[in-house]
Image 1 (cartoon, rainbow, N blue to C red):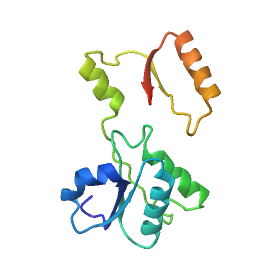
Image 2: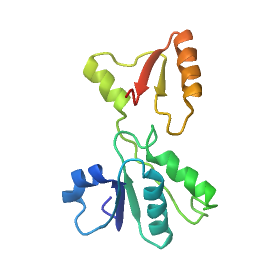
Image 3: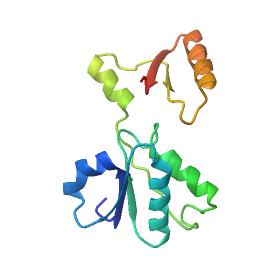
Image 4: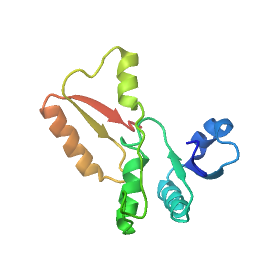
Length: 146
């Protein structure tokens, strides 16, 4: 992140790391504004700025990495050495791993991870996934149980 000119993230996460990012341009949005945040970060990157997007846990698990790639694809932005932008995803520790460890129940065999959020997935599809995972006798990790 030291090479970044701009740091984008959920407002709460930006507040947590603010002492580490002094002097950088900040893009901060609230919950449910993820698309706006990513689009602003992509715009910053397209204007020549190195931009970091921060999220909690692992950015590839119910987080921002997938959204970044999806929006780049929709905008027709070429990625990689021959493309317009290069994206590096830095892995983190997903909540399912840290939670299992804290419970003393490591995920040592087959398991399924299902989000109960219906913001992007219809509830009927979530119910089918729950039934299928339960029927297959998986340990099931639930995200967004509220």
